[in-house]
Length: 290
Length: 313
Image 1 (cartoon, rainbow over the protein chains, first blue to last red):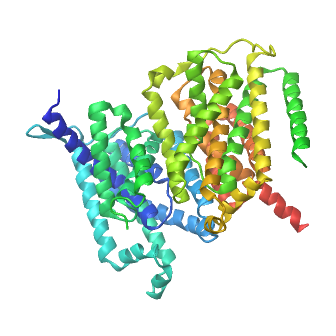
Image 2 (cartoon, rainbow over the protein chains, first blue to last red):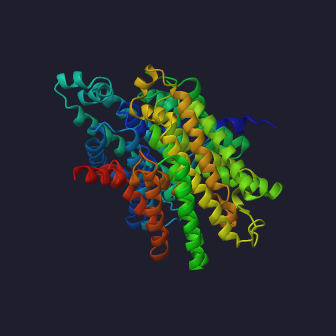
Image 3 (spheres, each protein chain N blue to C red):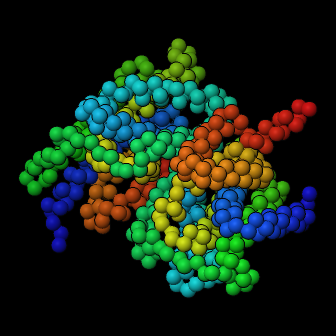
């Protein structure tokens, strides 16, 4: 029997999930979409963020999301260091495709195995007042553990979009992939601009990681499930466009939520891949591609 | 060296390895040796696409698992001899490679890599939901005591099968490298646009490379259920295969058939030692660190280092 309550709830859950996916993807949207750096290790940094939030919340009782905001400068520095290594070893030598990919794959692996060595393979979760609560509007359930990450993610996205379109550095970031020479003529160092952008992309992983562990328990290898999703969203929305990415995230969220509601949650991971392949086959430029 | 004498030499070395392993007379040698040989096949297979054409495949585990699960499927249906299962595994993995490649190889290289990465997740989802091949419970495959042709103890028979596969993989890689096909692959790696402009059928060549590479990975996976006895999702889809298949050629050197062979033997043996003496998590950490270190410091691997030393003298 078809029920409208179920449908309405599936749509709401999908939108909330999509908001969270946007936070997970925004980093890749910057590194892959704008800078053309295929950072497949991004989900591993998100899991690292989850574990940092877990550690401070379990040890000192800090709020996981607050912890992740405090940790952002550290992630920013990590991103700057990684970009510098990447630039000197691959970009400068013109070997960024094959070896660059292998490099990030190695980083992904090192991060995952290190987390396993430190924390073990058990699922970890955090506690906070809002995780257990749920609002009800009519027949629609609004669990706060989904709503809080979704709203904060939208806020982060809005801030980034403002930064990218209104400030000089932001506009330079948007320009760096198109014309480096023109950027140099504007007295901006392309390498520095790229470093800033990549560092920002890694800094978003801190926040996304905290969202993830608020939403669900986390174990070190869970990041792999997000690789397909993240790139599917990125490609679906159109590379280099944050609003397009948000649209893609919402779309994937709703489709996954429907799949989970009507076919069972064990099928959800396959959805993103199907979507990715379809997009690549029929519209590689994405929905709102440049 | 021309190909026929090379095959003969390879066969002699393989026979010596097998005789040597039998002389030691300990089953552990066969269990450990099987794993190392399996990595020789996977690394060589990966290199045919990754090293020769420059397209990075992150889905080694997916192709390997395709071989393993097609064996489970047919084993439950009717117990076929292993060489037949190997052929089936190769066909299934090759076909999946063709499909994935056809959809994504026309785009920039990164898209193909991402698609292969996601392929592993999707196939895993498929298997989880497919009860016939064991679903999330895993599948038992009873290993016979000895094989029906040579009457060797079964683990020795499996070792022999993998030895033959490793030899075939190396011979295939070497033959490709020296053929017109190999030069075509190299033009794609060096400058795809220029190759396309000079009339090299790049898409066709890339698809050929993907199919050969995927089929070899499927072959390596086909005997695996018999080796492990109980096939779990986690052991068939282990990221370990993907990272090793990339790390071994990168460490050995990606432009020749020798690189993945050296890388697989060195790194495979090292991992066996570390797994036994320290722990399997540490062993994976070592692989990751070596991979990153080699791509940064020695981009052409050990073979490249050797060539640089040799040409200076």
